[in-house]
Length: 179
Image (cartoon, rainbow, N blue to C red):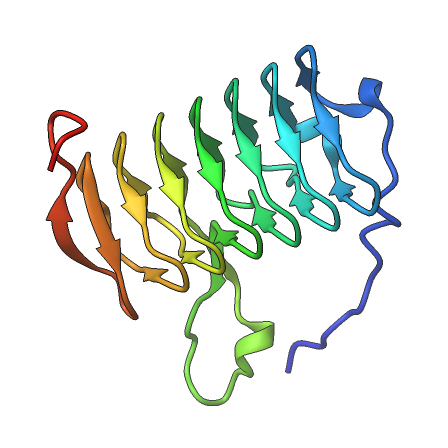
């Protein structure tokens, strides 16, 4: 049987020059942890809150667009690749995962199964509510809104409002600011 091998991913300390690229006016608050920064690209005018974790990965890239806000205590894992567009708001405690353990039968503990990778895309102008979870392989369409605590297991259409566990579309956002 395969064995689990515990290992460290480092202490999460970083310098600006560690990133693949980083724009101007990027604020990364105290307590934020960045692992494998050389696989992370951050645009300009980006805020990353206290105790957020950005987990780069050697197979794929994390891209964070301009004018994006990532709240406190978020966890973003880019093993399968993560692309976050511009002007995106990501509420505190949001989790974005781009990998999962496969299933290899009952005789193999899930922890020891091979990882499966699937890119996550959050398109421009989205809002991801506090505590939401976005699972591997999901695209959150442009201008859509994900409700607080939602678990997004399937693609979200542009300008949709989704909520729940699992997330379901409630409505479309109006074309103008008037409802």
